[in-house]
Structure formats: C-alpha cells, structure tokens
Image 1 (tube, helix red, strand yellow):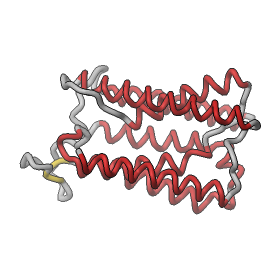
Image 2 (cartoon, rainbow, N blue to C red):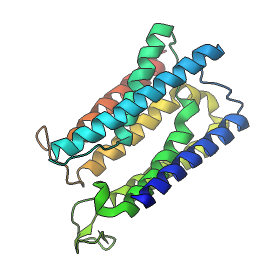
Image 3 (tube, rainbow, N blue to C red):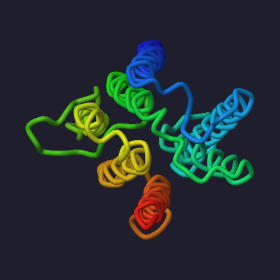
Image 4 (cartoon, rainbow, N blue to C red):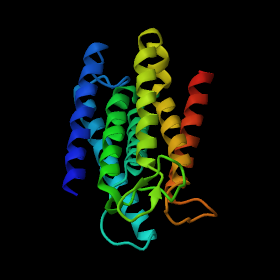
Length: 231
C-alpha cells in the first residue's frame, strides 16, 4: 500500500508538471471559453468535486458488487464524475465550446503513472487481470499468471499522449476543438476492452460496472465529436 501511495503522489506530480509545461509552451492560461478568473476558479472547483465524488462512488461500488469491503478509488469513475460536473457548469455558464484540452496531458500522466502503481501493488489493489497463458503473464504472488492489464492501459495512453504532442503544433485548432472528446473516446475504448480481462463480476449480461461507464463515455464522446463536426 505504501508503494501504491508513493506512485499516487508521483502520478499527481508528473501530471501537474506536464500540465504546466504544456500550458506555458502553448500559452494556455485557462480553459477555452473561460474568460474570467472567478469563473475559472469555480470551474476547477466543480471539476475537483466531480472527480472526487465519481472516483470514490464508482470505485467503492465496484468492490461492493464484488462482495468486498472498504473504500476504493477509480480513475474511470473520477473522469466520469468530472465530465458530468463540467457539462453542468458549462450549461449554466452558457459555455458551448470544449474546455477539456487544458487537462489532457495531466490526466494522461495520472493514468500512466497511477496504473504502474496499481501494477506494483499486485493483488491487494484488485486491478489485476484474469489468468493467461501468454508469455508476458505476471505472477502477483498467487502462482497464477495474469494479464498485466494495468500496463496495457499505461502503454496505450502514453502512446496517445505522444501522438497528441507530436501533432498538436500543426493541428492546434483541431485539438482545441475536438481533443478532449478524442481523449475520452480513446480512454473509454481501450478501457472497455481491458475490462474483459479483469475478474469483476458482471451486472448486465457479460458487462461489469466499468463496462457500463465506458459505454456512456463512448456515447458522450461520439455525440460531442459529431456535434462539433457539424458546426
């Protein structure tokens, strides 16, 4: 647990550092559509509340469904909660453009480093994969080779971040308008696939709780991409 906590802090620090670098390099002083400083503060507070509530609610609900006790966190649940909070805030503030580009690099580093922490935490973290006969299966101490799904997610999202940073200078307008929805599409899509390699109990046919959240996020991202494209 101490190792996981250390990586949680490393994830937070790396997320903040790459966010600061990205924002300063491309002079992104605040999210698009946020024009006033007080509004910026309220927006960030709304996101933080959504992130904490979503992370704790869905993380804990998942282990409850799996007949385990305790309080857990979920990055997927946190992103889901933050998006709901952001869209509610934007609706009442009459903001009609994407505000999410500002957060993409930091969120991805939180995921990449955080998942490495989950991997190193092993069985106690309850994020391990199901049994596999593949050569890269990992024994977390119970003599069972399992899919290192945590690393699958880290590698996928790190690849996306690299692609974004390479293409951003020539396609900054596209990324500002559609970037966050592309991020959600990639994140939810890859996470939906990896969920089939986890031991979480299904709640709808073969789909677990996080499958459902991923489907909702996929619908959201496609809807927003289509809406922005039509414009």
